[in-house]
Image (tube, rainbow, N blue to C red; front, side):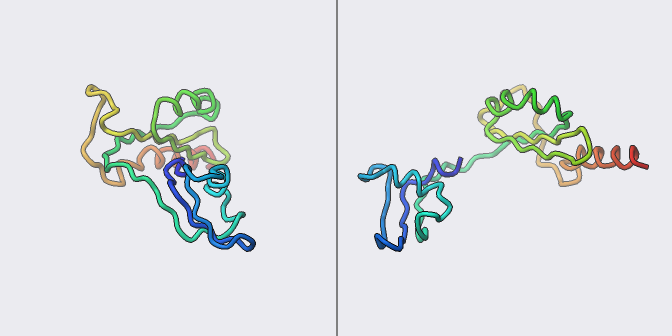
Length: 136
């Protein structure tokens, strides 16, 4: 989660004025609360984040049934760096997109050159077409 990369916050509060919070600062519990507090503790005026080096991701898109997506949820979340689910309402289908740093994907995994949007969206288009045909 993105809050793990926050290293300091400047927070303007109604009662304490401007506070600069860090994880190593006394009262670091307030820092951890402020990171995820969505502004409830005051107005966040500055955020310092630790950046990660630039890296390429390998994306894989596929369709699962809703039950299968539920069954595989924990496995997918543990196996992949990023997982995105797109549930299709009124259908028993979930489009799953996984992304992993290129360095974490095995050498023998299939790799494609950068694909245009038409190729990337093909599984979703096929699913929509199937839904249209079923409802016709």
